[in-house]
Length: 284
Image 1 (cartoon, rainbow, N blue to C red):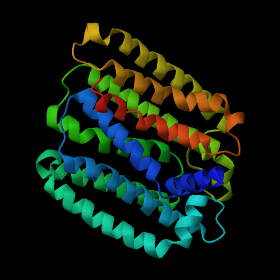
Image 2 (cartoon, rainbow, N blue to C red; image 1 turned 60 degrees about the vertical axis):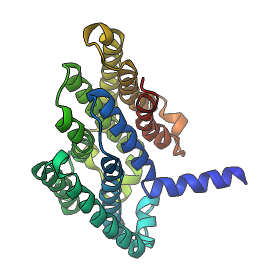
Image 3 (cartoon, rainbow, N blue to C red; image 1 turned 120 degrees about the horizontal axis):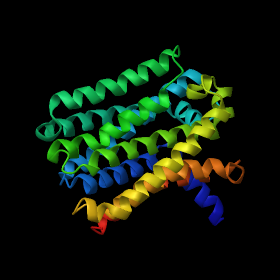
Image 4 (cartoon, rainbow, N blue to C red; image 1 turned 180 degrees about the vertical axis):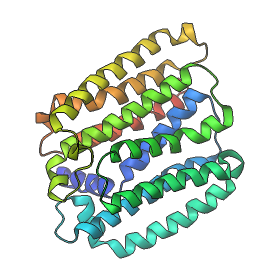
């Protein structure tokens, strides 16, 4: 009974993208630790809310495109409950717009419009279906910019370590998305959504993820080992979390057989971003 309940709870967390929302909070916390920015409470509300709107809209459009015979649980769920989810998505979008207006002094109108334009351009291209290459990179770019833009606008690059950690975070995000595509290759192929793997073979993509995952992990570890000496006031724990963000996609693909027919790779892949809350909560 307990296992059934846990599986059901995880199902709703996953299909409703609540794990992504928790992950973006962890990512936002990590960005504030690295940059040293102090963000207003409303920013912490806007972050998961805007991400939920984008992901829900994407799943609603995918669900409508594939239809009732979708084998992807997220798409099937959004197709079956499209009316209520569309209403909730609309309400959340209006609320996010109001919160963004309140944040204009920190976000700046031009920056907010730029991020919104990129997000809707990405959704438009995805719906068009003519371009299959690059969704993993565009999603990672929008996600990274959305998380780091506010803190960087508040304090800027206070140290030479900030752009390096920003790049490693972006790298880890890209690798995580490519890993998900590889793990769900058959599922996406069945629904006609091949993305990166429509251009790059799964074998080659896997090899590059393993290489870059190891490189990113080692780079962040080296930085963690010397950051107190090279950049006073920087966070060692933030470097270690980013090292894990880079390492997890490679680790999952290396032991892919253990994750077959299981959503544990999703829990691990999203959970590592949630760890960003640790250095923020305990001031590490």
